[in-house]
Length: 444
Image 1 (cartoon, rainbow, N blue to C red):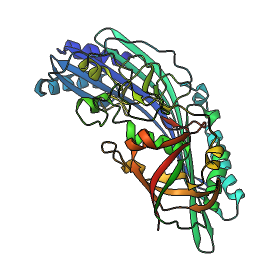
Image 2 (image 1 turned 120 degrees about the horizontal axis):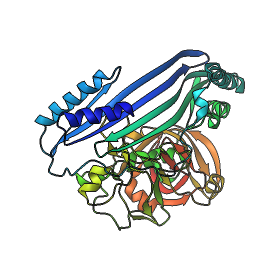
Image 3 (image 1 turned 180 degrees about the horizontal axis):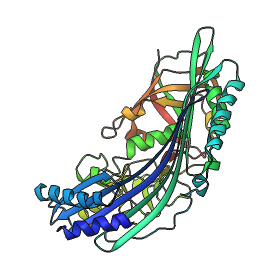
């Protein structure tokens, strides 16, 4: 906070109309592993993003910081950039409302004293569990990251805020081989607390996938019902809606959801919220990256689009209040509106019952390539790496390599048959298992 306030003071002294400093201090432990620990790194960083305005001219300068002299240098450079920047006719002012929402579950004190040996033991046990699951299975690659960060925001309106956060990510892949046949299995988890990471459960699930998919059968191309596992549908939500719900996209005419407020864009089954104060949510925090309090925002209610997601700039442009969604993926980037925790409200049907009610279709465990889909046109494509043919209410042959496709917005409006009850996250996106009435399945 001292550095943030110093940066604001220096920029103001050098003539800035407005100044805002975002300072982030972080410590990350990064581990790569297979059967053994391959690398173990601890990285510490301290960086600052300084935004200034000269009238309606704005500029930003970001730098890592090793001493206070660099703060003065950053202020001078930001001012010089602003002098030659074009005027922004839509600029009004920086965030003037600082505060803290009643968010909980975003900091784990355990990570402050977590012993390195404990991390190694957990990862080694997971790798051993893969190998003991089946003689055909070998762990091939994995990574584990923990981070402890402290973010401070201050501006020239005598406002400031500070928070601490923790994040943990684990991803592991295993391979099974038998008689010249090969298959892989992956699992991942993102959580805020050390005790929430299910190391051995993830290892068993990855090994199980690898063995079950050694023998797969091709299926013909056809249109059929498709059931997407919770984490798969969560990924799809993030890819297809994070941009279109962003008020910046809307204002620039990039979003297919522009001018759709109050309009039915999805099935009445669909309730979607952005919840910045969800307990233990991946992006839960008391205030956003401009210092504005986070909140729970109803985005889609019974299929009707109710809100876009705003930071201060886009909110002032539309003469509304920010929704507390200013995000900086890295300290050196300017804040932009983005979801905090995007959540599809669960239904009441278990995945088992959802499968049991399907006469013929496919159940999708994992995909790749959904990030190449087009959120503007709605064109959704993904390659199924792990899935099952569903016949007469049961899982039968394992399948892989088929491509599923459809128009996402048509699916939201007319294609959601059943919403499951098993909410799970993939990073900041949350969804249950979802049954779709029909997608194009491209087989062989």
